[in-house]
Length: 400
Ligand code: AMP
Image 1 (cartoon, rainbow, N blue to C red):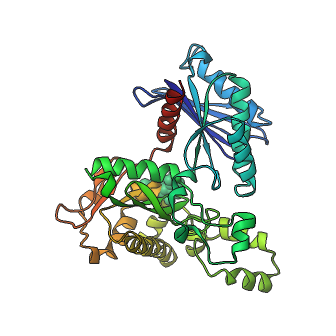
Image 2 (cartoon, rainbow, N blue to C red; image 1 turned 45 degrees about the vertical axis):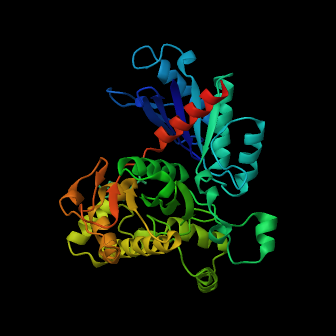
């Protein structure tokens, strides 16, 4: 099956065309600056990147240009759009009603629409992408894969906030969690890779990218995760603060004459390792280099980031009453050896020992712990597009 995987942001659209039989990517790319001017980056497998500037007032024009590129006589990878069998969409928020991936129908569209309040930047863009595909490829099945659905198995003790019940009942204020597609994919792959028994497994997945979250996966199901009502809660991230005393908001607002939304912009866009490094960078490549050159703010940023990850791992070991495997993924988890080493330096009490030579590797599935380590530690690249492709194929086949 040829599955077009689509991931719409407010002004961007990433895509991959995946052959589900070989799980290979036939072509990929992205549309940027949608609604501003428009630029398509397109790359067929084994071919050169092509960049085309073209007007993209909405996501419909962007998808239309992607489809044209896929069937282009010279660099296209399909003879006609009939060869696209299904479309899989990454959708940010499915609220409490959606617990798994779904074939898109009117009911699913209504839920995505209802959740626009909870995901104001992404859900409207996701809907635009879905509607554009339905318009341009009528009759093809579309599947929605939600960032929140894997976390719907959390029990109330994990997802309820200790605030008046009326806010939960009236406005559905609770922890939802994000990056669910990655947590599901990586925990499932880890169970296979490490030879664990899924029904008796305790896995912690640390998805450490520009956005970062961590989850406790008990017997293949999410038991807890660090992001909350929004992706702001939990770990320190590239530019997000993660956990802090909520009273900080009022205190700084009063001192600086800011309102709550201005303060939230600061916590989302101007905080995290970017802030701790005195605005040096949110990218760990820059931070590592600066730390190696003696920059103390960069050192603090890396230490605080790693310390927070280690504390969350400790709390999830308690949540599951043990742990069989800890898995690092995401751009930082897959590449930043210094972060992995610092995190594991806090976890010796679990009987974890790290293989120093393995910690130099990157870009593949590998075991980071020594053979005698009491807990297995692995590094595994995430692949959210492939996860979306797999769910799409499963649902489309089941519906036949
Ligand atoms: P992601 O959001 O998962 O794509 O991760 C992006 C982040 O991964 C970047 O902002 C960097 O902080 C980090 N990263 C990517 N490559 C490397 C690398 N080679 N070494 C250290 N950090 C990296």
